[in-house]
Image (cartoon, rainbow over all chains, first blue to last red; front, side, top):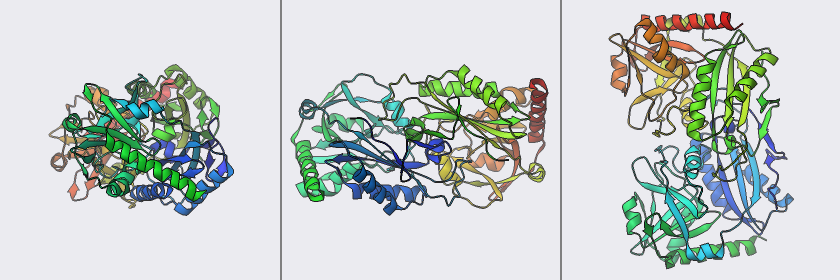
Length: 284
Length: 284
């Protein structure tokens, strides 16, 4: 099954204006949402994160309109069983210099493509990571937002071609460990779940929030958010990455570091699977 | 006179693919070139900077093709007497994750809009600046490149609405003075021309390079490139900003700081004007 059409500002079309501020400046943000059995998982949390990002960027967007367009898109098209839904919201008005004094409505693009989960084997045995040379630069204002300025991630991902490596870990310019190119990072140290703070760079992933705010408390797992370094990674009992599409994946190796595929990630993934199954039943 | 049509990959059209990597990730770069009397000023320097940036981003683009499309565009359309020519080159292939293993040719967009020089009065009396709260984050790999990740500039420019303020000065996250939102910065201190280094953030402007490499040496002006702070700004005898469109503009005020509209910027602007007139005669 191939990629589905884009819905641009409510109309099915494959093109956007060459004057788009998203194109010229990356002046906008996006969400990537897992769709399973026609259900957009964690949609309210994605909309909430988008809302927060749009406010920081000063983009006035009608969230109800976005939600209704997502519903219309999902209702009108036959989505694959597991799919990646992407929503891109960029500032309205044409790109004529950085100034953005505009009353033009925000530009909304909704698209979808099939998503293939990693093999059962990788889910069991864990994935392989590498360290990226590209650093994440520090900007507290933009930290957390899934904005359209993603050159650091593109260049980090371009550092390896080896298909056996699933993800690359990124440090910030101060040598703190932050996240993967397209995922958040969790370490288990003495039964405490630790993850880097996303206050100066990085993306505040919806799955990361879901684990910190709901799953870990429900499972009685202690969490700690702060600065982590390469040293912490070495000392970890268990390491896993998360994002909305993959859920979670155990990491068994990163260059000279090796970890056991441990039980904590499995408990968390079970909670994710349970939520996904419940959402599917509930919303259909 | 209104904006001219876009030429997208050699065809006149107003749209780009919604799958563009430029749109999804800002995975590309651009040039803004002053066109005067149908001549694209400093075109070889713009192409050279683009070449250098494309190499850093790992985007394989045919520079001769880009140049020939620019020539075709300028030949086929009647450009305004003074105009802003924009070339956007982004990585080819569709946005399906950050990975960019693609053999698709680079995407080339060429557009043009009329450009109005600032009033004679402002040119004589000098402009007014402000300090921006938004900081430039440090990333030595991306420093200098006029890439499409421009959210910091958009948000800095959004900090003021007062039309009397022409430009905002930006500091990096280490409190060094770097540049304006859309211009480079020069200080005159004891007859030495000083400008911030663009090795950790900022855009290496073509007009800045032109002044450092050609104009200042020809005029016998000493230059110094390094770290500058708010203190240096306070101590400056003369301050001016530059970019390819404006050439140079004297700054008379930035919040509580005031400067004389001094002679050095005038000598440099005379050299710029001389070059522009010569280019127009030479190339027509």
